[in-house]
Amino acid sequence: MIGAIIGDIVGSVYEWKNIKTTDFPLLSQNSQFTDDTVLTIAVADALLNNIDYGITIKKWGNKYPQAGYGGNFSKWLQLESNKPYNSWGNGSAMRVSSIGFYFDSIDETLDAAKKSAEVTHNHPEGIKGAQATAAAIYLARKDKTKTEIKQFIETNFNYDLSRKIENIRPNYRFDVSCQGSVPESIIAFLESYDYESAIRIAVSLGGDSDTIACISGGISQAFYKKIDPELIKSAKSKLPFEMQEIIEKFETEIGW
Image 1: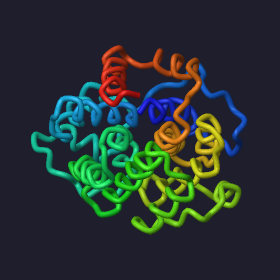
Image 2: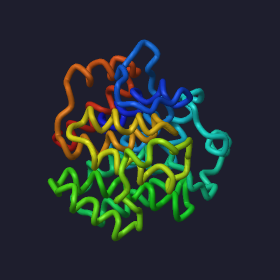
Image 3: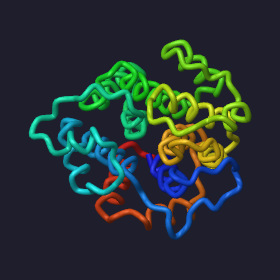
């Protein structure tokens, strides 16, 4: 899941200052983790300790209340209950990467992705976005080809992945919906040639840059199996120790 977290940190400085090029510094002094990383850690925590997703998501969300959550999610964090609020936003997809790495079958992966989404994002599009992202990571991890991944996602989730980045980029705008950002994130991965290129392509689309790069980054890590160690080191240095600890425990658990 470190690939997703790096994507979030790289995209963080471009979320409100979109760029339409792949030529930019990956990390800078202003690069920082956002809600995408906090909630990615929360889902991994739930898996590692067999805790309900809603409990860990609320726990980590309240630990880092200024991470950049949407308005409805921020309100949900303050509720005593964990009742979902029918969101179709891409928050369900950006936090799901650990599930794609964790389970041994596609059915388990899809079931867990649904459960992780519906604690807040119980709208069909919210669940769909989480499942499509987790499935793409699972299939990439299992050495499926890009063609096989594309066909599975298109067949099972009805996302149009035949579009090209060069055609999407000029008119793409900020879109926090799953349906308006998950397909684009997957396409960024499909057109990449290594992990770094996937992140650069994702950010270059503009829009919700940190989340698109987070989603694409998780898939790309699973597919390419390799990320520049210096990039990992630099990104981890921007995380609190308790987050680094979850990452290390998770990687040990899955044998990554």
